[in-house]
Each structure stands twice: as C-alpha cells, then as structure tokens.
Length: 160
Ligand code: RP5
Image 1: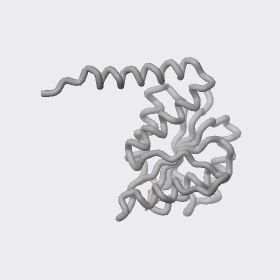
Image 2: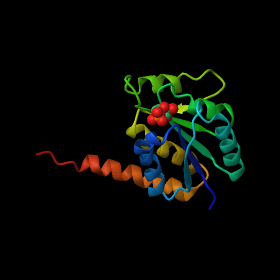
Image 3: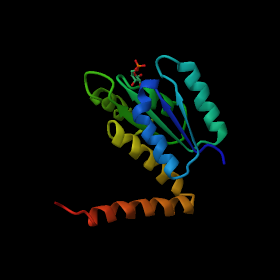
Image 4: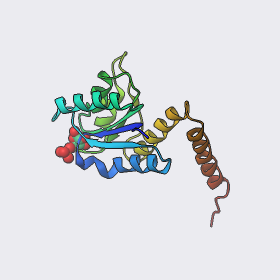
C-alpha cells in the first residue's frame, strides 16, 4: 500500500517525541514515512519533499518542530492536504514558543495544532487516523475499538 501519512520534523533531536507519532500510526497499521527537514535550514529540500509526497498520494502531513516552529505552516503553505502541527519543547520557553508559532496561522492557511510534546505527537497520529477513517471502514472500526479500550480502562480503574 502507498504511504498515507508523511511525518516531517525540523531536527533529528525531535525524533524522541515524534517517534510516538510513528508508533501510534504503526499500531493502526498506517503506512507512513518520517523525514527530518527544516523550514529554516533546508527550505528547498522541504519543498521537493512536499511535492513528492503529494505525487505519492499522501493524505495527511504531520509536522513537528520546536523554537520558532515555522515548519508546519510552511508545509501548509505549499499543499492543500491537511497538515497537523506538533509543537515541541526545544528551548527555554518550554514549547510555548513553538505552540504560538504553529497555532497562530493567518486565515487561509490552516494548521490543525495539537498539544505540546508527546501527548500532541500521539494525538497528531490519531487525528490523521480519524481523517483516513472517513474513507476507510476498517480504519474507522479500529479507531472506535481504540476509544472503547480507553473507556474500559477508565471504567475498570481500581483505586488503592
Ligand atoms: C527546530 O529547532 C527543530 O524542530 C528543533 O525542535 C529545534 C532545535 O533543533 P536542533 O538545534 O536540535 O537541530 O527547528
């Protein structure tokens, strides 16, 4: 099957957190690729990657970055495929810098922004999965099973 989700991150140092995104996609058997490309350091290569991903049939981009996190917005500027942005902790502002940079897109170029760090990386994958589920009954079924498992964990919680 062709690649459905493209994960891109600004630095190899982002992988510790963004690997949770890949892991969640793996859990659902979603074909994906993960790439390090920076809006600031490798803008030309990023542009080529976006256009190749479009040709490959990618249906959702997930972009994670820290500091002045331009990456998700720059991806969104170059495609109409949905982009989910993950703000990462990479400096003294604890990810608030990246959150503000990613969430404050100008009207017309949306980036669906998730929480800072690992919870966001996991939710970015689940959000992408929800988008794919719109046109795939088997993914939709898996997603609803995942939700049921979560509910059962809450309902069966035992307190000491
Ligand atoms: C951002 O700068 C990256 O996404 C990373 O979170 C941060 C620091 O990058 P490195 O200096 O670790 O490569 O562009």
